[in-house]
Amino acid sequence: MRRLRVSPRRAWLARMASLCALASLAPYAHALTTTAASPDPDALSPQQSAAFRAWFARIVDQQMRRGPTPRWTQRDCAGLVRFAVGETLRPHDTKWLRANGMTSLADTSSMPPELQLSASQRTIANRWTQLDGSTGAYASAIALIQRNSRFVSKDVNQALPGDLLFFDQGDDQHLMIWLDRYIAYHTGTVTPTDTGLRAVAVSDLMQWKDSRWQPLDGNPNFVGVFRLDFLTP
Image (cartoon, rainbow, N blue to C red; front, side, top):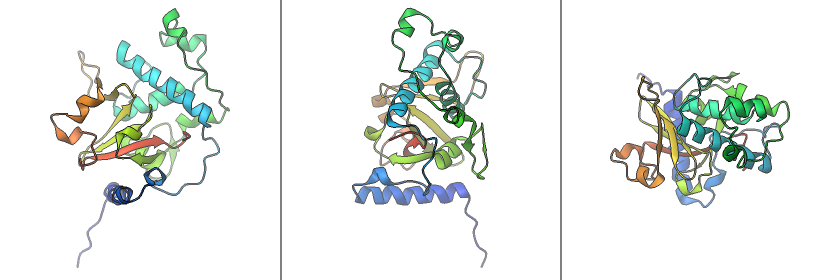
């Protein structure tokens, strides 16, 4: 009898479905992870993680309000995440603020606290784990989820700013970014009149006409909320 081959992505999604089913039976959904990994020596502390979330949300919001910076070149849903992570881990000195259009009094007066990072922590954005186990500055949407994040829940009420909402539409996977006040994402398509950036209220997405994009527990296309591995908690 011929054996059917199951793709790594499908096998992982099946494993996630099993974990989600267990989560509905157990009160410890936060402990579910896609793989058993050893502690990352470069993981951010709770204080660093809080500052990271604030800067990350600020940088994504800046792209939404003012349009994408020319320095963000790989413009799709995963590219937005990689860009925002990279910029969040940079020193936010006067040169950086000027380059990002954040030198006005209104901007500088509400800046988050600066991250106090080690030299190694600043290189996290250049060490994404690929699906094949190699590392580099690039990671696809599914690699960001499967190899660089941990499952939180299928309940978006458990999401924190900077968490990722992952949708699987068969041949296409998509990420959205939870910013608390709203959800941000990139469509993956750019035209002369459309940056591809979108912002949608949580309540609106919950009732989206195309139910495949509703972040609800009963939606099989919504895999769940994920958190970047280097953040604590």
